[in-house]
Image 1 (cartoon, rainbow, N blue to C red):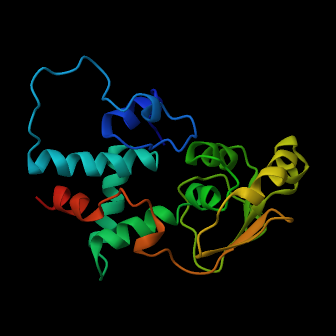
Image 2 (cartoon, one colour; image 1 turned 90 degrees about the horizontal axis):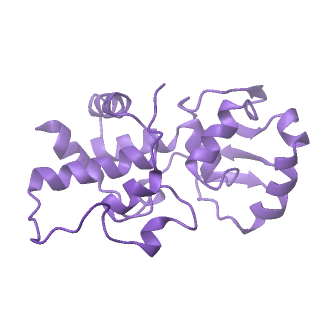
Length: 202
């Protein structure tokens, strides 16, 4: 699956929040959008603001437009609040679960761990970042992953990383379990899923 490979901090500066997740994100040092500064302050329409909110979510999870729209369409066909269902399905992606467990500092690093075959789900290697993880699934590093130099570094760092309540993590074994589905408060506070739904429903 294709993905955005350009400078990620450019998107962070464009939308005013740290979407890449790195501690040294450029938006901290340079909060202004990239490019020359406009002389006049341009007013953003409602449609433009909805687009911005949609792009925030899309770039944070590392998705292309077609893939992101399919997530929305599946969420809109299920009973319940579409925005919450959309965010739940994004949070339950394998690369995001690996990131939330603290195995990767960023979603991009977690995606790389998955693609390199260092992550196992229910004891079997799974190298598809977009794989949907179900409640009750166990996620851990593979035996090869546990023998890698990265596992040694991870064990020394993972103790300082926070884990959301819908995950249960064994830091010594570098393994975790999905104990519940993520709720509205389990994703970044600067996401506005209702605006995403409004953008696609027009």
